[in-house]
Length: 237
Image (cartoon, rainbow, N blue to C red):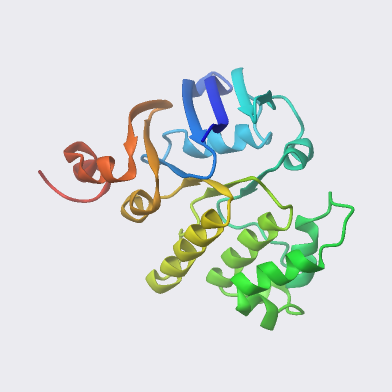
């Protein structure tokens, strides 16, 4: 398959601090790709710049061959790229259903089938469709954040730390959903502090350190890499 996303020499700065230092990597269509690395490595800044939330200093972000760098976030969503942000950022004073409808706000067609699709992935959301999002558990809010992103009918979903702060049994459920939506044709670009889970689900992976990509390979290759084991998987050589 061809690459759905190509990052070329991307740099992002905050004031005088260079958070991303000219990185380049590709995301193959239909695959799960993960970025792993310590806090402050530049992973979130990478996703936020792709999504148009953070302005890049220079570089290119090619989505289906078109440079989307510099476009507004809503234009990028229209092209088929959505972000599930770290911390979920649901609208607490709106219902579950209202939050999901916000995910489809750029669409002019009927969203009933998409709502049923999201409810099929997350039956809990259907049970709580009239409940205020702020009253949901952390795991339910993460389900809602993923469901909201899917309501835009994306070709590429980016997820920033989807397991953060969740119980292990909930984490397993989130990763099962990541696999399921990927099997149904959605490409996934994933940042995840649980490197072991991320590498197990990923087709390919990149290690970021201080704004640079220092290692790449398949998920299985990086799981077996001694440096990765020691640095990110809590295993000594």
